Image (cartoon, rainbow, N blue to C red; front, side):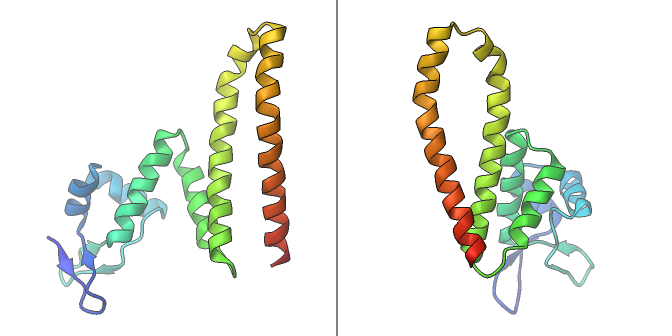
Amino acid sequence: MRQESSETKRSLYRIGELSRLTGISPRTIDYYTGMGLLTPVQRSSGNYRLYDDETLERIRRIEMLKAQKFTLEEIKENFAALHRATPNEQVSKQLAELQTQLTQIERQVKELEPVLDTLKPQQAKKLFSVITPQTAACVEALLLLLNKSNLM
């Protein structure tokens, strides 16, 4: 049962509709709510929890991060970091996103370690000669960003 909030004319969803729209079970939505990953925006007159469009996006983000093998606790920490964004919210949000991507890259590198160990020395040298300049440039750019954000 989709409802419209009177104050801002936004769509509000009960758990069943949220479940249909996202493809995850109502039980999972309850679990995410209990963990603090989701927060209902209000309660209906029948005391049903109501969620908004932002919750739909948040569920999609949770499912995407889970597909990338992040634990729910890591996802919760990521959301908490985004929520703590201070003066320059855009920079803070982007840095949190970069941290998520770096964690994913770390996981992928660890998955590649057994393959890298089987490379012949010439293959490894060629691979690292291509990867190293790009990695160094990324690290340098991140350090510059971090230094700028610390100055703000």
